[in-house]
Image 1 (cartoon, rainbow, N blue to C red):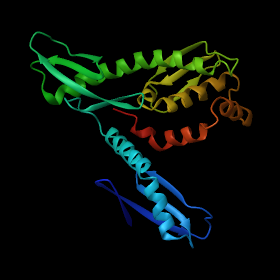
Image 2: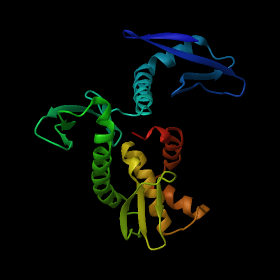
Image 3: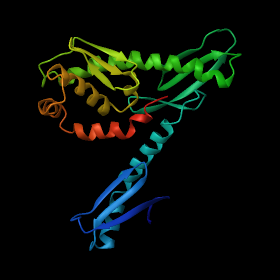
Image 4: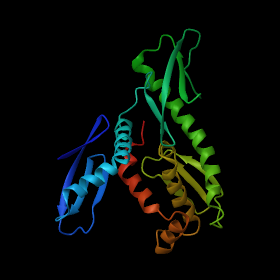
Length: 241
């Protein structure tokens, strides 16, 4: 394992030398930083590249740290962060002796909950999670219905309707009648991933299969769809609360 300094931070990275490499590649994922270099590559050159990419590396490390936090079930206590459209927003919780049922709102960049005074902390999740899920579904649906218009100038087909799904298996689906369903959990992901799921289903309006023509349609709408598809494969399990 090799180390560089970036400000007050240290970045550890794994260096792999390969006879099959002609250039130096650098990647960051949930397992760490990896550099793959040609066998005869000069170490100073490798270190120079890692140092130059240090700001990007730290940004990716922080992102994956947030993703790891996102895989933990939320307790819906004050200070936790709840995701929406790929960003995390802090939750504030206040008690009120005058109410019998909890309330959850989104104001000034934070989720704000008011719970009955006699509600125990360990009961917060059961009380607030359904309200949060309902909020995501309402806001996510409105977002998707506006978002798909970005692709209408390239695509002559429009969905008959866009609806929310609570499926445990699929991120989206498209019916022969032209209705597009989107899994509510996809709205926890970054907008680029939502676009991929949306385009994936919109393309089914023209091709009700996964033929070569289908994927050509997806690529026409989203040239980098493969990267977004791979992101969803790697991180889809973290899109849960």
